[in-house]
Image (cartoon, rainbow, N blue to C red; front, top):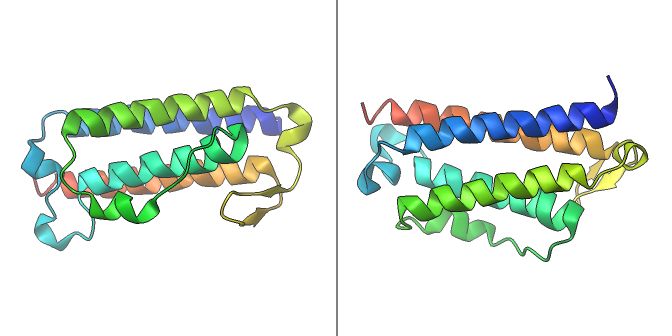
Length: 150
């Protein structure tokens, strides 16, 4: 399997996880979206904001150079945004991820890569796979948190 195909599949997984997260969010009330019941450190809303910021930062600013400026602290402190905004922002970030992967060539994906925050990776492919696994991890945390809503 080529590195480019691996990256394309990683972003397909981000899409799949994002859709599952949106389906998890859909029945929640505004209070449930931001709840930290059960001693969980981050609400589903916070996790979603963090994932949105992560995609925009690492794939939008990093690969597309689209000018996105991350305010990571706000991802964890703004806890009253409407559910519709959270979902819309996540969908837009997934589109950024897809656009970023479409912009990558076979040669570029195998080259060493320095992320916008200065982290160095052996290849751009590895970096994107890491972004996808980070996304999956936090989706699992959101699913766990949703169990406290049932």
